[in-house]
Amino acid sequence: MFPLKEVSYNEAHNMVWGAIAFAEEAGIEPCKEFALAQYFLEDDTDDIPLIEYDYGKDGKHFLVAQTQLELSGYLSVMKKHLTADQYEFMLEDDDDDDDMEDDNDEDDSYDTTHYPCYYQVGDFPYTYHGTYPSEKPLPEFPEVEQLFESSDSYLVLQNNDIDKILALPHDKLRKQLEQTVKYGLFRVNGKNGEVSDQAGVYDQIIMHSIIFLGEVGAVETSLGVALETLRQSSDIYDFLYGDGASLMVVPTLAKLGLNSLPTLMDFMLEQGICTNNKMNVIEAVSSITVTYPEKYQEVIEWFETLIDHIIEAGPSAKFTNYSINGIIVSELLNLRAEKLLPKIEVMYDRKLVEAQVCGNWQEVEYDMKLHSYSATSYIMPIKEIYKELAREFRTSI
Image (cartoon, rainbow, N blue to C red):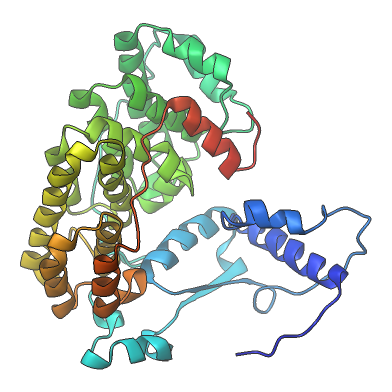
Protein backbone atom coordinates (compact mmCIF):
# COMPACT_ATOMS: atom_id res chain seq x y z
CA MET A 1 0.00 0.00 0.00
CA PHE A 2 1.26 3.44 -0.87
CA PRO A 3 1.85 5.80 2.07
CA LEU A 4 -0.58 8.69 2.43
CA LYS A 5 0.70 12.15 1.67
CA GLU A 6 -0.84 15.40 2.81
CA VAL A 7 -1.60 17.85 -0.02
CA SER A 8 -3.11 21.30 -0.23
CA TYR A 9 -6.76 21.84 -1.03
CA ASN A 10 -5.86 23.25 -4.44
CA GLU A 11 -3.92 20.09 -5.28
CA ALA A 12 -6.74 17.80 -4.15
CA HIS A 13 -9.31 19.90 -5.98
CA ASN A 14 -7.42 19.73 -9.27
CA MET A 15 -6.64 16.04 -8.89
CA VAL A 16 -10.29 15.10 -8.41
CA TRP A 17 -11.86 17.37 -11.01
CA GLY A 18 -9.06 16.62 -13.45
CA ALA A 19 -9.60 12.89 -13.09
CA ILE A 20 -13.33 13.30 -13.64
CA ALA A 21 -12.78 15.37 -16.77
CA PHE A 22 -10.27 12.83 -18.08
CA ALA A 23 -12.68 9.93 -17.48
CA GLU A 24 -15.52 11.80 -19.15
CA GLU A 25 -13.44 11.97 -22.34
CA ALA A 26 -13.88 8.19 -22.44
CA GLY A 27 -17.59 8.40 -21.61
CA ILE A 28 -17.13 7.22 -18.02
CA GLU A 29 -19.16 9.07 -15.41
CA PRO A 30 -18.32 9.33 -11.67
CA CYS A 31 -19.77 6.71 -9.36
CA LYS A 32 -23.18 7.36 -7.79
CA GLU A 33 -21.62 8.31 -4.45
CA PHE A 34 -19.96 11.32 -6.04
CA ALA A 35 -23.36 12.95 -6.50
CA LEU A 36 -23.16 13.70 -2.76
CA ALA A 37 -19.37 13.69 -2.25
CA GLN A 38 -18.88 16.47 -4.81
CA TYR A 39 -20.22 18.96 -2.30
CA PHE A 40 -17.10 18.52 -0.21
CA LEU A 41 -15.35 20.35 -3.04
CA GLU A 42 -15.77 23.85 -4.36
CA ASP A 43 -17.10 24.31 -7.89
CA ASP A 44 -14.40 23.96 -10.51
CA THR A 45 -14.07 27.62 -11.48
CA ASP A 46 -11.24 30.01 -12.33
CA ASP A 47 -11.15 30.99 -8.65
CA ILE A 48 -9.11 27.83 -8.01
CA PRO A 49 -5.58 28.03 -9.51
CA LEU A 50 -5.23 25.44 -12.26
CA ILE A 51 -2.80 22.57 -11.70
CA GLU A 52 -2.46 20.09 -14.55
CA TYR A 53 -1.78 16.42 -13.83
CA ASP A 54 -1.08 13.50 -16.13
CA TYR A 55 -3.67 10.73 -16.10
CA GLY A 56 -3.86 7.33 -17.73
CA LYS A 57 -0.74 5.62 -19.07
CA ASP A 58 1.64 7.16 -21.58
CA GLY A 59 -0.98 9.74 -22.50
CA LYS A 60 -3.65 7.12 -23.13
CA HIS A 61 -6.71 6.11 -21.16
CA PHE A 62 -5.85 2.90 -19.31
CA LEU A 63 -8.61 0.62 -18.04
CA VAL A 64 -7.79 -1.94 -15.36
CA ALA A 65 -10.77 -4.26 -14.83
CA GLN A 66 -11.30 -6.73 -12.03
CA THR A 67 -13.67 -9.00 -13.96
CA GLN A 68 -14.44 -9.92 -17.56
CA LEU A 69 -17.91 -8.45 -17.07
CA GLU A 70 -16.49 -5.13 -15.87
CA LEU A 71 -14.03 -5.09 -18.74
CA SER A 72 -16.77 -5.71 -21.31
CA GLY A 73 -19.05 -3.04 -19.89
CA TYR A 74 -16.48 -0.24 -19.74
CA LEU A 75 -14.85 -1.11 -23.05
CA SER A 76 -18.14 -0.81 -24.91
CA VAL A 77 -18.45 2.73 -23.55
CA MET A 78 -14.84 3.70 -24.28
CA LYS A 79 -15.03 2.44 -27.86
CA LYS A 80 -17.89 4.83 -28.45
CA HIS A 81 -15.88 7.87 -27.32
CA LEU A 82 -12.27 7.04 -28.19
CA THR A 83 -10.33 5.73 -31.15
CA ALA A 84 -8.39 2.48 -30.86
CA ASP A 85 -5.07 4.29 -30.37
CA GLN A 86 -6.38 6.38 -27.46
CA TYR A 87 -6.80 3.64 -24.87
CA GLU A 88 -5.36 0.42 -23.49
CA PHE A 89 -6.82 -2.10 -21.08
CA MET A 90 -5.96 -5.11 -18.98
CA LEU A 91 -7.83 -7.71 -16.96
CA GLU A 92 -6.21 -8.23 -13.59
CA ASP A 93 -5.10 -11.79 -12.91
CA ASP A 94 -6.88 -13.35 -9.95
CA ASP A 95 -3.57 -14.90 -8.92
CA ASP A 96 -2.28 -11.43 -8.04
CA ASP A 97 -5.03 -10.94 -5.48
CA ASP A 98 -3.56 -12.19 -2.21
CA ASP A 99 -6.81 -11.68 -0.36
CA MET A 100 -8.64 -13.82 -2.88
CA GLU A 101 -6.04 -16.55 -2.50
CA ASP A 102 -6.40 -16.45 1.26
CA ASP A 103 -10.17 -16.65 0.99
CA ASN A 104 -9.91 -19.68 -1.28
CA ASP A 105 -7.50 -21.74 0.81
CA GLU A 106 -10.00 -24.56 0.76
CA ASP A 107 -9.44 -24.92 -3.00
CA ASP A 108 -6.20 -23.34 -4.22
CA SER A 109 -6.89 -24.56 -7.75
CA TYR A 110 -9.88 -22.23 -8.14
CA ASP A 111 -8.83 -19.80 -10.85
CA THR A 112 -11.69 -18.13 -12.66
CA THR A 113 -9.42 -16.95 -15.47
CA HIS A 114 -9.41 -20.54 -16.74
CA TYR A 115 -13.17 -20.80 -16.91
CA PRO A 116 -14.30 -20.61 -20.55
CA CYS A 117 -15.97 -17.22 -20.79
CA TYR A 118 -18.43 -16.83 -23.65
CA TYR A 119 -18.51 -13.06 -23.53
CA GLN A 120 -14.97 -12.13 -24.38
CA VAL A 121 -14.18 -8.77 -25.90
CA GLY A 122 -13.92 -9.25 -29.64
CA ASP A 123 -14.35 -12.99 -29.35
CA PHE A 124 -17.95 -13.57 -28.33
CA PRO A 125 -19.85 -15.72 -30.82
CA TYR A 126 -22.63 -13.19 -31.32
CA THR A 127 -24.74 -14.77 -34.04
CA TYR A 128 -28.18 -13.23 -33.54
CA HIS A 129 -29.73 -11.58 -36.58
CA GLY A 130 -33.00 -9.75 -36.14
CA THR A 131 -35.25 -8.71 -38.98
CA TYR A 132 -36.82 -5.27 -38.66
CA PRO A 133 -39.12 -3.18 -40.87
CA SER A 134 -37.15 -0.91 -43.20
CA GLU A 135 -40.10 1.38 -43.92
CA LYS A 136 -40.92 3.99 -41.31
CA PRO A 137 -44.44 3.46 -39.95
CA LEU A 138 -46.91 6.30 -40.18
CA PRO A 139 -47.38 7.37 -36.54
CA GLU A 140 -50.87 7.72 -35.13
CA PHE A 141 -49.56 10.43 -32.82
CA PRO A 142 -46.64 12.23 -34.52
CA GLU A 143 -46.36 14.62 -31.58
CA VAL A 144 -45.09 11.75 -29.40
CA GLU A 145 -42.09 11.01 -31.59
CA GLN A 146 -41.42 14.74 -31.87
CA LEU A 147 -41.27 14.96 -28.08
CA PHE A 148 -38.93 11.97 -27.93
CA GLU A 149 -36.64 13.53 -30.53
CA SER A 150 -36.47 16.93 -28.86
CA SER A 151 -36.49 15.90 -25.18
CA ASP A 152 -34.47 18.31 -23.05
CA SER A 153 -30.92 17.26 -22.17
CA TYR A 154 -31.35 14.01 -24.11
CA LEU A 155 -32.98 12.03 -21.29
CA VAL A 156 -35.58 14.25 -19.72
CA LEU A 157 -39.27 14.60 -20.45
CA GLN A 158 -41.18 17.19 -18.48
CA ASN A 159 -44.06 15.99 -16.31
CA ASN A 160 -46.67 17.83 -18.38
CA ASP A 161 -45.38 16.10 -21.54
CA ILE A 162 -45.59 12.73 -19.80
CA ASP A 163 -49.19 13.48 -18.86
CA LYS A 164 -50.04 14.46 -22.45
CA ILE A 165 -48.64 11.20 -23.81
CA LEU A 166 -50.35 9.03 -21.21
CA ALA A 167 -53.68 10.76 -21.92
CA LEU A 168 -53.66 9.30 -25.44
CA PRO A 169 -55.58 6.04 -26.12
CA HIS A 170 -53.30 3.37 -24.73
CA ASP A 171 -53.98 0.70 -27.35
CA LYS A 172 -53.06 2.99 -30.24
CA LEU A 173 -50.13 4.46 -28.31
CA ARG A 174 -48.79 1.00 -27.48
CA LYS A 175 -48.94 -0.06 -31.13
CA GLN A 176 -47.09 3.08 -32.22
CA LEU A 177 -44.39 2.63 -29.57
CA GLU A 178 -43.82 -1.00 -30.56
CA GLN A 179 -43.59 -0.09 -34.25
CA THR A 180 -41.25 2.77 -33.44
CA VAL A 181 -38.86 0.49 -31.53
CA LYS A 182 -38.81 -2.11 -34.32
CA TYR A 183 -38.12 0.49 -36.99
CA GLY A 184 -35.59 2.15 -34.70
CA LEU A 185 -33.67 -1.13 -34.43
CA PHE A 186 -33.48 -1.20 -38.21
CA ARG A 187 -32.07 2.32 -38.18
CA VAL A 188 -29.40 1.68 -35.55
CA ASN A 189 -28.13 -1.64 -36.93
CA GLY A 190 -25.05 -1.31 -39.08
CA LYS A 191 -22.67 -3.96 -40.36
CA ASN A 192 -21.26 -6.60 -38.03
CA GLY A 193 -23.15 -5.34 -35.00
CA GLU A 194 -21.84 -1.79 -35.28
CA VAL A 195 -24.02 1.28 -34.82
CA SER A 196 -25.26 2.51 -38.18
CA ASP A 197 -24.39 5.93 -39.53
CA GLN A 198 -28.15 6.32 -40.04
CA ALA A 199 -28.95 5.83 -36.35
CA GLY A 200 -29.60 9.51 -35.75
CA VAL A 201 -31.50 10.13 -32.52
CA TYR A 202 -33.10 6.71 -32.48
CA ASP A 203 -31.23 5.82 -29.33
CA GLN A 204 -33.31 8.29 -27.33
CA ILE A 205 -36.47 7.54 -29.34
CA ILE A 206 -36.15 3.84 -28.53
CA MET A 207 -35.27 4.58 -24.91
CA HIS A 208 -38.35 6.74 -24.35
CA SER A 209 -40.56 4.23 -26.18
CA ILE A 210 -39.36 1.37 -23.97
CA ILE A 211 -39.97 3.39 -20.81
CA PHE A 212 -43.54 4.22 -21.89
CA LEU A 213 -44.22 0.61 -22.85
CA GLY A 214 -43.76 -0.14 -19.18
CA GLU A 215 -46.89 1.97 -18.59
CA VAL A 216 -49.11 1.14 -21.57
CA GLY A 217 -47.59 -2.06 -22.97
CA ALA A 218 -49.25 -5.44 -23.38
CA VAL A 219 -47.39 -8.51 -22.15
CA GLU A 220 -48.19 -10.48 -25.29
CA THR A 221 -46.43 -8.03 -27.61
CA SER A 222 -44.55 -5.33 -25.70
CA LEU A 223 -42.41 -7.66 -23.57
CA GLY A 224 -41.00 -9.24 -26.71
CA VAL A 225 -40.18 -5.79 -28.11
CA ALA A 226 -38.33 -4.84 -24.92
CA LEU A 227 -36.38 -8.10 -24.99
CA GLU A 228 -35.50 -7.52 -28.63
CA THR A 229 -33.50 -4.47 -27.61
CA LEU A 230 -31.44 -6.77 -25.38
CA ARG A 231 -30.68 -9.12 -28.28
CA GLN A 232 -28.56 -6.43 -29.92
CA SER A 233 -24.77 -6.40 -30.13
CA SER A 234 -22.83 -4.91 -27.24
CA ASP A 235 -22.12 -1.75 -29.27
CA ILE A 236 -25.77 -1.19 -30.10
CA TYR A 237 -26.89 -2.07 -26.57
CA ASP A 238 -24.53 0.56 -25.21
CA PHE A 239 -25.73 3.05 -27.81
CA LEU A 240 -29.32 2.49 -26.68
CA TYR A 241 -28.91 2.33 -22.92
CA GLY A 242 -25.34 3.15 -21.90
CA ASP A 243 -25.10 3.21 -18.11
CA GLY A 244 -28.83 3.82 -17.67
CA ALA A 245 -30.34 0.40 -18.44
CA SER A 246 -31.45 -0.14 -14.84
CA LEU A 247 -33.73 2.88 -15.15
CA MET A 248 -34.64 2.58 -18.83
CA VAL A 249 -35.37 -1.05 -19.67
CA VAL A 250 -35.33 -2.90 -16.32
CA PRO A 251 -38.54 -1.27 -14.98
CA THR A 252 -40.36 -2.21 -18.18
CA LEU A 253 -39.08 -5.79 -18.05
CA ALA A 254 -40.24 -6.07 -14.43
CA LYS A 255 -43.68 -4.58 -15.06
CA LEU A 256 -44.39 -6.60 -18.20
CA GLY A 257 -42.63 -9.76 -16.99
CA LEU A 258 -44.44 -9.81 -13.66
CA ASN A 259 -46.87 -12.46 -14.87
CA SER A 260 -44.73 -13.83 -17.66
CA LEU A 261 -41.66 -15.23 -15.94
CA PRO A 262 -41.42 -18.21 -18.36
CA THR A 263 -40.86 -15.75 -21.22
CA LEU A 264 -37.99 -14.20 -19.29
CA MET A 265 -36.58 -17.69 -18.63
CA ASP A 266 -36.67 -18.50 -22.34
CA PHE A 267 -34.64 -15.35 -22.99
CA MET A 268 -32.07 -16.27 -20.34
CA LEU A 269 -31.50 -19.61 -22.07
CA GLU A 270 -31.06 -18.18 -25.56
CA GLN A 271 -27.72 -18.65 -27.28
CA GLY A 272 -26.01 -16.44 -29.79
CA ILE A 273 -26.80 -13.17 -28.02
CA CYS A 274 -24.62 -11.06 -25.76
CA THR A 275 -24.75 -12.70 -22.36
CA ASN A 276 -23.89 -9.41 -20.72
CA ASN A 277 -27.28 -7.97 -21.72
CA LYS A 278 -29.04 -10.61 -19.63
CA MET A 279 -28.10 -8.76 -16.45
CA ASN A 280 -31.16 -6.59 -16.99
CA VAL A 281 -33.52 -9.54 -16.80
CA ILE A 282 -31.87 -10.79 -13.61
CA GLU A 283 -32.32 -7.34 -12.03
CA ALA A 284 -35.93 -7.14 -13.20
CA VAL A 285 -36.96 -10.53 -11.84
CA SER A 286 -35.26 -9.87 -8.50
CA SER A 287 -36.93 -6.47 -8.11
CA ILE A 288 -40.41 -7.94 -8.55
CA THR A 289 -40.32 -9.38 -5.04
CA VAL A 290 -39.88 -5.96 -3.42
CA THR A 291 -43.04 -4.45 -4.89
CA TYR A 292 -44.95 -7.74 -5.00
CA PRO A 293 -43.83 -9.83 -2.01
CA GLU A 294 -46.51 -12.40 -2.83
CA LYS A 295 -44.35 -13.25 -5.88
CA TYR A 296 -41.35 -14.18 -3.77
CA GLN A 297 -41.74 -17.96 -3.95
CA GLU A 298 -42.38 -17.87 -7.69
CA VAL A 299 -39.27 -15.77 -8.23
CA ILE A 300 -37.14 -18.10 -6.10
CA GLU A 301 -38.39 -21.05 -8.12
CA TRP A 302 -37.49 -19.13 -11.30
CA PHE A 303 -33.92 -18.67 -10.09
CA GLU A 304 -33.75 -22.30 -8.98
CA THR A 305 -34.76 -23.47 -12.45
CA LEU A 306 -32.13 -21.19 -13.99
CA ILE A 307 -29.44 -22.60 -11.69
CA ASP A 308 -30.51 -26.14 -12.62
CA HIS A 309 -29.91 -25.29 -16.28
CA ILE A 310 -26.53 -23.76 -15.45
CA ILE A 311 -25.41 -26.79 -13.45
CA GLU A 312 -26.63 -29.19 -16.11
CA ALA A 313 -24.83 -27.32 -18.90
CA GLY A 314 -21.63 -26.87 -16.88
CA PRO A 315 -18.57 -25.12 -18.34
CA SER A 316 -19.80 -25.70 -21.89
CA ALA A 317 -22.87 -23.50 -21.40
CA LYS A 318 -23.31 -20.97 -24.18
CA PHE A 319 -26.27 -19.12 -22.68
CA THR A 320 -24.34 -17.83 -19.66
CA ASN A 321 -20.82 -17.21 -18.37
CA TYR A 322 -19.10 -17.23 -15.03
CA SER A 323 -19.62 -13.49 -14.51
CA ILE A 324 -23.37 -13.70 -15.13
CA ASN A 325 -23.50 -16.66 -12.77
CA GLY A 326 -21.83 -14.46 -10.16
CA ILE A 327 -24.50 -11.81 -10.68
CA ILE A 328 -27.19 -14.46 -10.21
CA VAL A 329 -25.61 -15.41 -6.88
CA SER A 330 -25.44 -11.72 -5.91
CA GLU A 331 -29.16 -11.31 -6.59
CA LEU A 332 -29.93 -14.40 -4.58
CA LEU A 333 -28.03 -12.80 -1.69
CA ASN A 334 -30.25 -9.75 -2.11
CA LEU A 335 -33.30 -12.02 -2.10
CA ARG A 336 -32.01 -13.85 0.98
CA ALA A 337 -32.64 -17.13 -0.82
CA GLU A 338 -31.11 -19.35 1.84
CA LYS A 339 -33.12 -22.25 0.46
CA LEU A 340 -30.91 -22.28 -2.63
CA LEU A 341 -27.58 -22.47 -0.78
CA PRO A 342 -27.08 -26.17 -1.60
CA LYS A 343 -27.39 -25.53 -5.33
CA ILE A 344 -25.24 -22.42 -5.12
CA GLU A 345 -22.59 -24.56 -3.44
CA VAL A 346 -22.74 -26.99 -6.37
CA MET A 347 -22.07 -24.07 -8.73
CA TYR A 348 -18.98 -23.17 -6.69
CA ASP A 349 -17.85 -26.79 -6.50
CA ARG A 350 -17.99 -26.99 -10.28
CA LYS A 351 -16.21 -23.64 -10.61
CA LEU A 352 -19.07 -21.99 -12.48
CA VAL A 353 -19.02 -18.70 -10.54
CA GLU A 354 -16.62 -15.79 -10.69
CA ALA A 355 -15.86 -15.16 -7.04
CA GLN A 356 -14.86 -11.55 -7.62
CA VAL A 357 -18.43 -10.70 -8.59
CA CYS A 358 -20.14 -12.02 -5.48
CA GLY A 359 -17.49 -13.39 -3.11
CA ASN A 360 -16.16 -16.88 -2.52
CA TRP A 361 -18.37 -19.69 -1.26
CA GLN A 362 -17.59 -19.10 2.42
CA GLU A 363 -18.48 -15.41 2.11
CA VAL A 364 -21.70 -16.16 0.25
CA GLU A 365 -22.80 -18.76 2.78
CA TYR A 366 -22.03 -16.40 5.67
CA ASP A 367 -23.76 -13.39 4.14
CA MET A 368 -26.78 -15.43 3.09
CA LYS A 369 -27.39 -16.76 6.59
CA LEU A 370 -26.76 -13.32 8.06
CA HIS A 371 -29.24 -11.72 5.63
CA SER A 372 -26.68 -9.03 4.91
CA TYR A 373 -28.33 -7.67 1.78
CA SER A 374 -31.77 -6.82 0.42
CA ALA A 375 -33.23 -6.54 -3.06
CA THR A 376 -33.88 -3.27 -4.87
CA SER A 377 -37.06 -2.59 -6.79
CA TYR A 378 -36.89 -0.91 -10.17
CA ILE A 379 -40.67 -0.92 -10.47
CA MET A 380 -41.58 2.72 -10.11
CA PRO A 381 -44.01 5.23 -11.65
CA ILE A 382 -42.87 6.70 -14.94
CA LYS A 383 -42.39 10.19 -13.52
CA GLU A 384 -40.16 8.75 -10.83
CA ILE A 385 -38.11 7.00 -13.52
CA TYR A 386 -37.48 10.28 -15.31
CA LYS A 387 -36.72 11.98 -12.01
CA GLU A 388 -34.10 9.32 -11.23
CA LEU A 389 -32.66 9.59 -14.74
CA ALA A 390 -32.31 13.33 -14.30
CA ARG A 391 -30.56 12.82 -10.97
CA GLU A 392 -28.33 10.03 -12.31
CA PHE A 393 -27.19 12.00 -15.33
CA ARG A 394 -27.27 15.40 -13.65
CA THR A 395 -29.87 16.96 -15.91
CA SER A 396 -32.93 18.98 -14.92
CA ILE A 397 -36.60 18.13 -14.85
